[in-house]
Figure 1 (cartoon, helix red, strand yellow):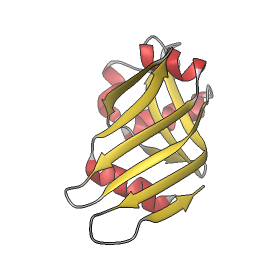
Figure 2 (figure 1 turned 180 degrees about the horizontal axis):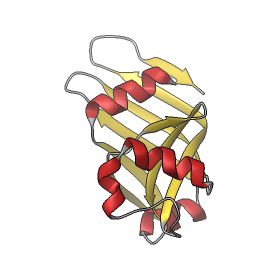
Figure 3 (figure 1 turned 90 degrees about the horizontal axis):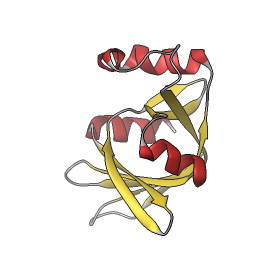
Length: 130
């Protein structure tokens, strides 16, 4: 999992795909964090993406570093604990202008049954499951 985290963190931006009814939705994200041995992302409960995850928690993200790309799929689990939210916001202090661990909007999700595939045009794919 650490290798997946490092890859995504180094890319700085990744693209998260969800489903909205029968329509795929993709948007850029920047938060990636390890807390209590799980890989987390963050958004707001008031956003469409949170509603889409609640309706169908199976997601995939993709990031590219210039020579390799990663595709990470799995099920997102909403972790409503203040400790998880605080850990994420401490790691991304710039978000504190919009979010607080004590508000009803801050949402942190961790990956469950995750499968990452690191790919390039010059090497075999590397599969990492956690």
